[in-house]
Image 1 (cartoon, one colour):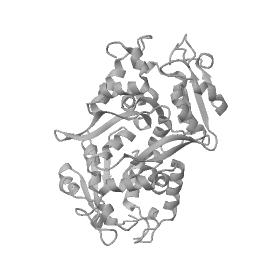
Image 2: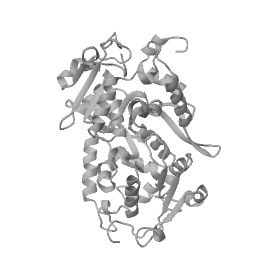
Image 3: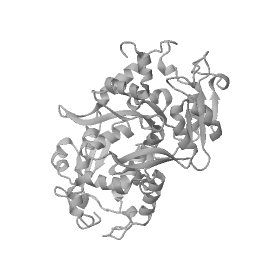
Length: 224
Length: 224
């Protein structure tokens, strides 16, 4: 990856990517890692737009979170991303506190370092919160089946399946990244965020497919 | 265990017990298991007191939970018990919802059964929420270091250590089961719920040791 072999990394898939993450994000305490994540998110800018990543969140997602909270829903982020990478900033950016974040994780170990207890991050994958992993992560962290679930790739397929198969009224939604002008356009052939099965089977399962291009009046907060 | 070898089971320790739990509580879906746990807790009675287990919770613990909630604390149960065993009844009995329960777990697997998505419980231990496991379970599920922690055995030692080592004001408390008349008296030599290191080192770490016999005016809800 350091040699610029992005294609090789992409070809190794999510699992290869997780192995890289384990190797680069391990060997330190959880407190040290939280500081690195906080510092990074406070300073990093997207190479294409030049905006801070915290400003590249989706305006309709922020509005949806607010709407659900205003109607007494508990709202969780269930991401393929590292749970300890996201937790230091999801509250500020999304209004989602650490305990409402579900994500991928590496194994940890409790140790005493110079008499002080620390939790160390090990070079070993614990859980991949993607595809079949998402309903399992939800079951482990929340212990309840969601009433509504929202996604944007086939990594969310099983989460929506699990959600909408529950009794009573359920809601499943997939955002289709089809807006090359304001964001990106990709689906079936993308290495990251592939969306194919969702487009094919989602509508038959009663899920709503949202076109970013046609249905979103605004993509990012502020003026597009 | 079926042959009555309780001593053998006790000698195998928490790990042996967890292996028995995995063998008897696996091979079914999470929904099926939740039903078994709900049915059991609704009907089972303690062999010594004849009371339902739901009435054998500690009155001071209920009062503490209410007091903390009234002061805007989020309250969690962090138990060595099985997370999916506890979740179906902790809300009714303790007012603690499923997402605020941390416990031991077995591995699960997402499957489609006759077209319906299910989460199956596998015969494999995933996580033991005891001793060093407790701070790790807290870190995984809550993602924040507690301000206060309450326990009653050396299985809680590291949780209190992790809690009280945090910055700012922290609180650690251990309940000493020393009331043979109203409950049980045990500590250093007990196979289950051993409390030795906590009694020796807790006070030096600033923890409060509570005597069930001397400090609790009431043990169970209702009249003792």
